Amino acid sequence: MRIGLLTEGGYPYVSGEAGLWCDRLVRGLEQHEFDVYALSRTEREEAEGWVPLPPQVGRVRTAPLWETVDDGIVHGRRARRRFAECYGELATALSTAAPGDPSGSPDGVLQGQTALEADRFASALYGLAELARDEGGLPTALRSEAAVRALERACRAPGAHRSAREARVPDLLTVAARLERALRPLSLDWYEDDDLGSVDLCHATSGGTAALPGLLARHFCDVPLLVTEYGVRLRTHYLTEPDSSPAIRSLLASFHGRLAAETYRRAAVITPGNTHARRWQERCGADRAKLRTVHPGMDAAPFAEAGECPEGADPQTVVWVGRVEPAKDLVSLLHAFAEIRRAEPAARLRIVGSPFGPEGAAYLAHCKGLAAQLFPDEADGPHAVGRNPVSFEETGGPELPSRADAYASGALVVLSSVVEGFPSGLVEAMFCGRATVSTDVGAVVEAIGGTGLVVPPRNPRALAEACVALLRDPERRERLGAAARARALELFTVEQNITAFHGIYLEILSRTPVRRVVLDDTGEPLPFAVPAEAHVPGRWSDPTARIAARGGPGWATDGPVRAAAPVSVTEGAVR
Image (cartoon, rainbow, N blue to C red; front, top):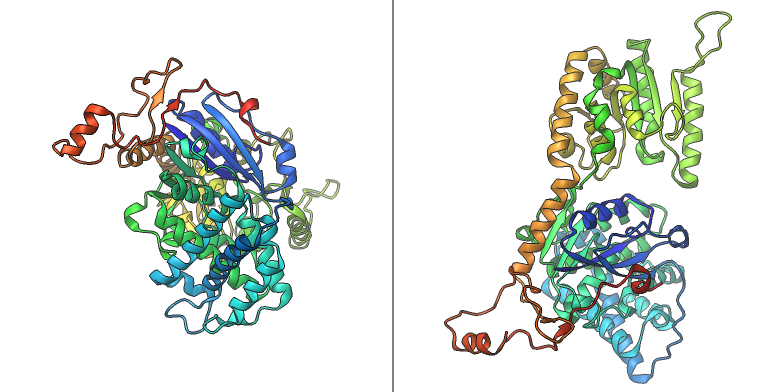
């Protein structure tokens, strides 16, 4: 079958764990064809280029979300009227208080929507898409004064929630700009019969903007949609917009919530990466019957040596590995380690990771200063050079060439985060056969099961007590590490991930009529080109079905699609 893989900020670009996951999926399902439709987030991402693509990737189309697009399209009076009506309906759907939410809080979006509100948002969204298809694009219109005035009218209208009513002109300008970026896929030329309309299935690798092309392919071409989310976009919005005004936060939260609800309503199957994401999806309106939890697939091979030889670890060393940023709460970890040192004076802490962005660099400097205050350099004698029991390191050097070496250097791995989605670093430690102590955030409990200790977040004393308990009990550490490795190899490998998605692809296709007949170079039907799992509507005993069986499939009403030679990546790419 042919899969349209929809990505945002990931595959085929070289950066990001999402890109690695998609690359493993595509390479593992070599029996299928893949067309990649990628949305890029930054100029740097595009400059870094693509990963090497396997031969089953036939076409790559890209579109930027980071640059300002001037399409040069001037709409006529009728098109402007259509835009004003559709955008006004969209703005009204975003600013109207949800039922059962008298305060007008945007959190009411999570409590459920009436059919009228859901239909209003969907009608406005698809109306804008149809206008873009008819007129050639909407970026200029979405940034126009008419769009801002429509937002202002909706926020001032009766029934608008309190935060929306407090929106000022700078807030409205910011919201309009953010909506233009999020709705940019509406203006792409990807939704023709020889583009996304020719695939058997759209697989969106995240929700939000990445799923929009899949929604439009379903709307225009009736292509089934599969949505995979390892992090729910609405949750990400709440976590990453702390400094915005209440009006901006509420309107954008309303947009993400209603877009998520529409995506879940139209998707054939939804695959959360963990139970934590699944709960968020259910709160946003996802039907439980559509949900299939598929844990992310991770490559266990780099960690095999460390997992098979756990005896090489330093029994007094605690290791933290990850990306340095405030959400990882290294401050609490350092205070916890101060208590660990009082109980176990020989203990050492290795913090392995690099900072993420300017905020991460500042946080790393703060943590280094705190470590110097809490743990003055210690020397073995009057003529020896002192050494701090806490070290800040990065992988890639002679001491720690890889992340596997970092995990293998200690007997105990700790995670101190206050915010976490799926803890991939924790799973890597499990592959290495290490006992773990973690804070109870995100999908941590789901990942480790009963193979590690879990403590409340922002509780240095509880973190210290758990670490001391394992440092003093090597047999328990070994037992937990072995159980952790067995659990990780059973649930979180690339192989189980690929097998799960292959089954889901067949499940969706078995319930979806095939819309095309494939011909070879001579114009003859290509045997077995249509998957055997395709579902033929109707009963064979039905007279209409018998006529269709004699004269050709009745559901193949469109013109036949010729089998094309595989397109090279260079030729098929639209940059």
